[in-house]
Image: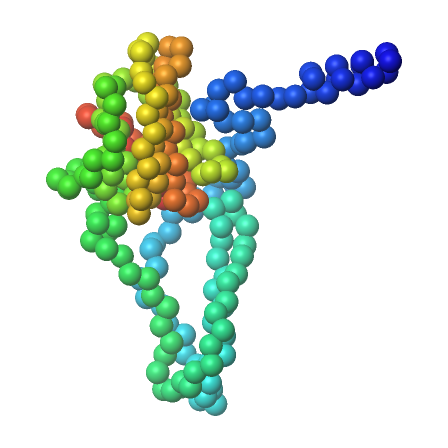
Amino acid sequence: MIKVFFLLFFLFISLSARENPFFPSPGEQELPYTSNEDRTKMPLKRATIAIPSQARIIKRVTVEFKNLDGSMQSKSIELDNSVDWHLPIFISQSYSQNQKKIENVNTQKVNFKKLASTKVASFYSFGKTLKIMTDDKLIRNFILVSPHRIVADFEKDTNLKYMSKVNKHNAFSKIRVGNHKGYYRVVIELDGFYKYKMQKVSEGYLFTLI
């Protein structure tokens, strides 16, 4: 009987219920970085591959790439098409005008799209940049995975109602805002894996995905 009691007691204290699901759960961690390497590269526009004169049929194209955490990966597409060896094979990636402007978004008059709003902050997006318009001080910001999201805490004592807004077909796929003692937390869920840079501007803060 005593053994059963201690077994039940151990199981009870080992349970880990989340008091506030708005905070990250145990085991979640910030995105790992393998080094301080500057990974800012020129965007891919167009590259060419010359094929030898005996080539007649293209069977497979493989692309090897480096992930955000520094690991290497490759993906292939199976083909079965005739080719003319006189012509090069092109690799390209197109960019919209909005994407080309993104680096200087804070100095240009661009049309931000309003995503969500609360009594303490408003959220606008332009391409891969999110503008948070607020008078409150940003006290910390970091990124978490599973799901991939930016967390930003703003200093303010306020009675703020919880807000959650889904943004379909947008890099900032979901925005959540919740109130805590002495600050409110903004969680920005992303549509994929990114790093980001933050910039203080006169209207608030810019978060640009890279």
